[in-house]
Image 1 (tube, rainbow, N blue to C red):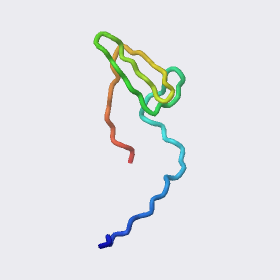
Image 2 (tube, rainbow, N blue to C red):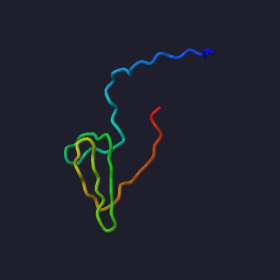
Image 3 (cartoon, rainbow, N blue to C red):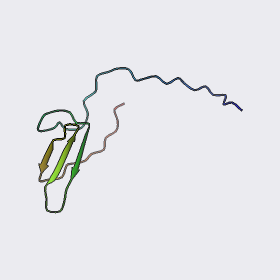
Image 4 (cartoon, helix red, strand yellow):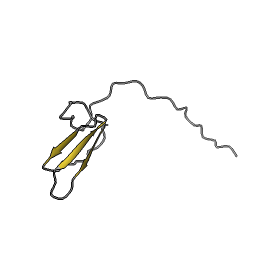
Length: 72
């Protein structure tokens, strides 16, 4: 039996300039990162890795993480 509901046609997202993200810029090259990963081992500084540039930044304090609602 066929589904009586119609399926909307999928289309690509319109080309629009990227909005500035909530992530801080890379301190080495000042580019906007897509992702920041971090690692800390006991007694060692926090190491932040900025993607896609790959620069690393060491900090003595862990980053402050905040969850915010997506823009409306």
